[in-house]
Structures are given as structure tokens and as C-alpha cells.
Amino acid sequence: MFKGVYTALATPMHANGAVDYDTLGRLLQAQLAAGIDGLVLLGTTAEAATLSAGEKNEVLSFCTGIIKNRIKIIIGTGTNATASTLENTRAALAFNPDGVLLVTPYYNKPNPNGLIEHYKQAAALGKPIVLYHIPGRTGLKVPGHVLDRLLAQVPQIAGIKESDYDMAHVTDTAVKYAHRLNYICGNDDLFPQYLAINASGIISAAANVFAPAFVQIYKLFMQGKTKQSFDLFAKLYPLIKACYLETNPTCVKYMLSKIGFGSQAVRLPLGEIADENKQKIDRLLQTADENLFIH
Image (cartoon, rainbow, N blue to C red):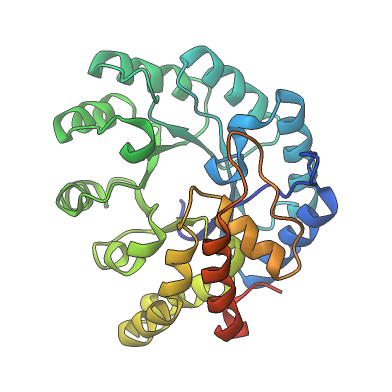
């Protein structure tokens, strides 16, 4: 259901914090031109936690009006409260997404019964769910035995966006469940490893800037040209790492600003990246192959 390269779309903003719809439109068109398979709207990279309900609705209306069902759409609706997760998911249904992305609730650290009930209630709203597992942000690592229960009791979970760096856990889950659901890479810097363990694709923040490269890496791998796929990944790797010199999406937005897609503005509590990191990114961009970038 969710295969290939999905860009976790950033939300361009003016210096005053308002959404920059002109740049958002150009960014969307560039993503479509790069041949991505889908978009994640209102995810972490979109700074969804800082957008009001009205802004979220406006962003979804604007984006879906441009996309016009040409690619798949997943909408991020998860929060650390079941009530607001359900509210967000109901609002997203108006835009007929192919699925909703539900992060494991952060800060609360729900116990197994609570976690399962959280996903059950969201599943009852009728859309396929992509479970977003990112222990580094949420403080919640879902153990294998809990995931077993969760997937058994909530069959509407159609995919997992996996952003754990514990490759033993990742491999265990892939071996057990990659044929039950779409196991999706959530770590840009581990894309080849995930493909090698039967991941269905990637949800990528770095693809905001480097969508053409990610699409080609995926295509080459699927064609059995694994060495060429890895060689391209290796070429891109320093730029991927630079996307995470500071908290996502600060560096991604700085890169976008350097290639003509809006400003580097983010909303507090995120702030401008350090000058030394700007200089590191500038040096990389000056020598990078322009074919890696969106246009």
C-alpha cells in the first residue's frame, strides 16, 4: 500500500512565522516533478505541533488541491492525547488521505493496554494507519511482545514508519512483519540497510531537498542494481548527515533557502541553526552534484 519514496513535507514560512504558500506550492511541484510516490503532510518535518487547527486545515486544502490524487497522501494526526488524535484524524478525513500517521504517544509513556486502546480508537475511524515508532523523540520504545499484541488487535495498522536506530529491533520486526504490513524506513541515513531487510520504502525529511536522489536510489535497488544504488547513496550521505546537524527541520529549511525555496524560518521553540553549521552546509552545497536536488 505504501511503497517507494514519500517526502515528509516541510512547511515553508515567512520570517514572521506565517505559512509561505507561494513557496509551498513550488515545493510541491518540485516534489511531483522528482517522481516521488507519496507525501506525508503535517508530520514532524511540517512542524505540525506548532500549527493551529485552522492552519492545518488550510495547509491540507492547499496541498491536496495541487496534488489532485496524482500520488498517495498520508496525513500526520497523532498526538500524545487520544482525544486530540481522534479530533485531528476526523478533520483529516475530509481530505481523503490514503492513510494517517500516528506517532506512539510521547511524554505519557503509555502502558501496553493504553497504547493498544489508543490505536484501536483511531482505527475505528476507518483509515489505514501507519504507526510511527520514533523512540528518540517520544521516549517510548515499543517492545516486541507489545507490538505483537498491537498488530494482532489492530489489523488496520497497514504500515510502520520505523525510526529506531536499534538495528537488532529493526531486523526482528522486519523479519516478523514485513510481509504483514509495509515496513517503512524512517531514518534517511539507514535507507540501504532498510531496503536490504525488505522495507517497502522511505518517509524522508531530507527528500524535501534531495527527492530526485532518493527516488533514484530506490529505483536502482528495486531493479537489482544494488551497487549503483549504494554508490548514489554514498554520494548523498554527507548531505543527508548535514540535514540532522540540528533538530529537524531546521537544517532542511536552511538548505531549501539556499536553493531558492523560501526562507529558513522555523517556529519556536525551534530556532535558527548555528553559524558553524550553516558554514558546514554551505561548503557541502557548493560542491554537490546539482542532479541530487529538487528544481
